[in-house]
Length: 206
Ligand code: C5P
Image (cartoon, rainbow, N blue to C red; front, top):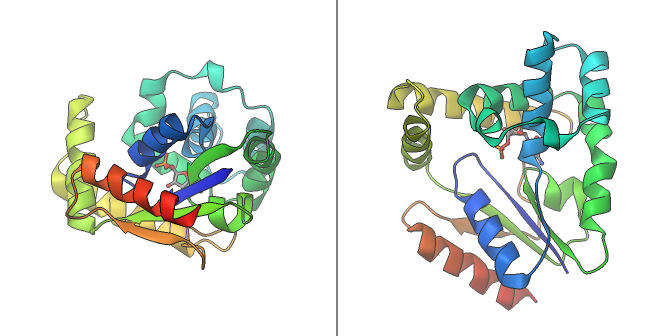
């Protein structure tokens, strides 16, 4: 069984993915971490975020054990991830890794932006998780404040809008809901209710 979970930033997709993977006993790949790691590695090595050649070399040789979770989760890493993710050769360099994970024996669950459209168009169940911008902004702001980052809610909302536009507007594998995906709108849902809704959608689709 392949489960594809895509959606917008701070929609709750990551939490839903973790909980569904645990529930169904499926190995889980958070594909955003791959792009975040490329962005962080580039910043550490002083590689400009628009240099396709060196960035795709970084993507090809990526070793996730080189990174600590905290640096991957920062606002700066998220922004860098979305910049490098718009480069086709970077996406190409990360494709096989994701495809191999998606097609492993016993099934898998992947979450990201293009799982249902590009990485695993053959997934058994596809979810698209979204919520209103103010709601997502508040969630992300609380998360960043919790990590000790010094940002205002307005700044976070502004960054979120820029990220949405970049992810949805890129020409290669834009963040998009697959035609056969089920929409989970988490705007008015607690995380528990959102997980329940997602689980019910998976059960109905199987
Ligand atoms: O989901 P997360 O916020 O960790 O993703 C960071 C960025 O990585 C996204 O804004 C997006 O630009 C990029 N991404 C992508 N394709 C994926 C997963 C993430 O382009 N499958």
